[in-house]
Length: 200
Image (cartoon, rainbow, N blue to C red; front, side, top):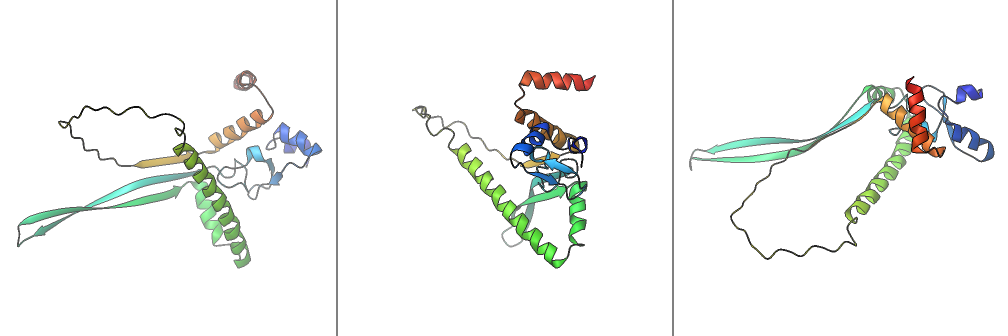
């Protein structure tokens, strides 16, 4: 494969560094083109940003309320059940789902172990970030508590938690290009100048 064909999905920094040291340049499992780590998909690193970016996850807290009427005591009892709903959507997720049925038993076993190890790495990184976030004020002294007591105010807050995380081809590619520019040690001014030239 020629350098011009590589340069579409391999940033100049990785292309030059690959001549001097071992920089991982992989072949996308979907489009079969070469790509570097800066243009690898954040969702599945075995694919490039263009081939695996149309995925979204929607997290919801679903609340169901029940009412029970007791005829003997003439009392209505209300109770609630809550459940967490996590739903994946997007064309790349649909593609991955359909691929599963066509895999051989050996390929299925290999993919399970690969993604299990990837999942453990992702979970470990998330826990590390949670711990760092929880300890961000560890060295900050606490303010002194107020001695005045106010019993006149009562507040009840009910919150429905909904979180949606989306990824698109444009945002994933832009993220990869920005990472490649930062890896090339470009200053913010140089990056802005390149973006301005690209708009013309």
